[in-house]
Image (cartoon, rainbow, N blue to C red; front, side, top):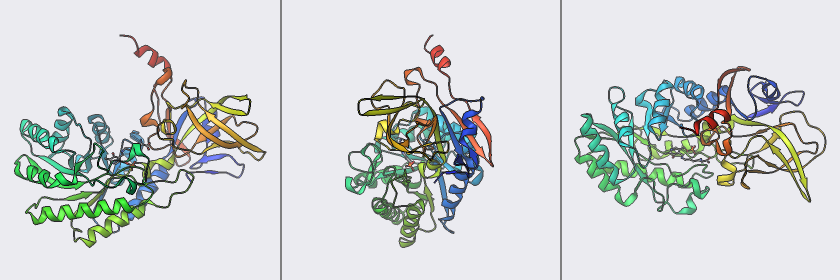
Length: 423
Ligand code: LLP
């Protein structure tokens, strides 16, 4: 549980009462707050799960791009999985060296490819190629920049949909997904990369989906990845350095989760050992499992509304601040930040945005509606997916360590948004 309560019943993030942050005049609700110490502790624990095996944990920074978080994780030795030139800039500015960065994405722009190839002495750890067509494009950019490109081939294991225990919108490892080279084309991809003097095949990778709550599909994909690596080695490829099994480690949003990040790591370690590939570096790209549980979105109640048999608590955070419920029918726990002992009842919590999907679901909350609430497990894909829809502000982000706010990132205000609509 990322939050707890003190003896007085006040909700704490780390050791900081959220009430203290809500009452602080320096920022206003809604805001995100993150527990940097817990993020670092979680990352350390994931790192330990690999034991002595050579490995690299690359945070999928699409889950959270906040500088204070990336800097802390970079200091620990983590790398980054990026999907755009801008994410690449943020990762390097946070101090993550190019040799710890992988770059995924089905349509990298020429300028983005050039930037990735051009960083440091030898470019980033790998550009992860997602199609046969992309191989020629990256090769052309490598020629133009006069530098070989370090590449990995992202395989699409073409799993049966049932093996991907997640929401359709975030399942990527099946036949009809746009991601990765279909398993039947992998041999041809290896041949084309191998035939190019401008491309250096340093890895294979996959990412089959997000919020996976079983390891079966992951295990099957890891076995396939290892098989492909063995075939490539047998075929004379001697440049492989790593195999990357992506992210997707599910977390508990309150209704339980039968797997832990360590279970996914154990699958990888076992497959590498079974196939004698222990000399290759194991790369994983979790996002949610590192940051998800350690961020909350804090909101004030604007008013309640009772009509017929319906009753709502209308808060000042909306789907523009946290879109996961609207987009994926995701459920996030919502709890009062103050002590509450009295009777409770079912309230539907909604935001102010003019959309019916601006709805965080029904929650058991005090009958006397709380003045402020925390939406839990919002550290991943919360702020990074926020928008200014309805002319709303982007929320501030507060970073907590050792019982204090140690950094603040200011969101964009509504006034800045209004000004930006004119030439
Ligand atoms: N690697 C690649 C290539 C990815 O596309 C993703 C996520 C990850 C790693 C990290 O996945 P994670 O460990 O965080 O599950 N917005 C959605 C999730 C979309 C995930 C997209 N790709 C959500 O809020 O649930």
